[in-house]
Image (cartoon, rainbow, N blue to C red; front, side):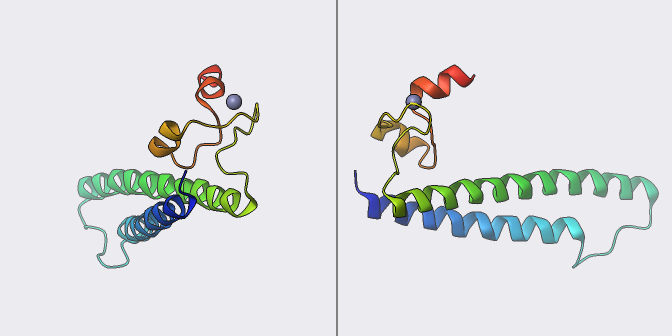
Length: 110
Ligand SMILES: [Zn+2]
C-alpha cells in the first residue's frame, strides 16, 4: 500500500471539497446577489439555499473524515479497522480512502 500516494489523493480531495464548501456557503448566503423581491421567488431561493447548505455540510463532514484519515497515516494506524483491528482491504481503501471499518464491520453496522 502506497501511503504517500493515498496522502496525496486525500489532500487533493480535501482541497476540492474546501473549495466546494466555500462556494456553496457563499451561494447560499447571497453575498453576491440580493434575494428577489417576489415572495414566491424568495421561497424558491430559500429551498435552493437549503440544498446548497446540505451540500456544504456534506463537504465539511467529508473534510473531517479526510483529516482523520491523514492523522491516522501520520500515526501509522491507517488501514486498520477501528472496531476489530483487522487490516482493511486495499480494494476497500481505494474505493473509500477515509473509511475506518473493514467490510465485515461496516456490513454489521448496516
Ligand atoms: Zn473490522
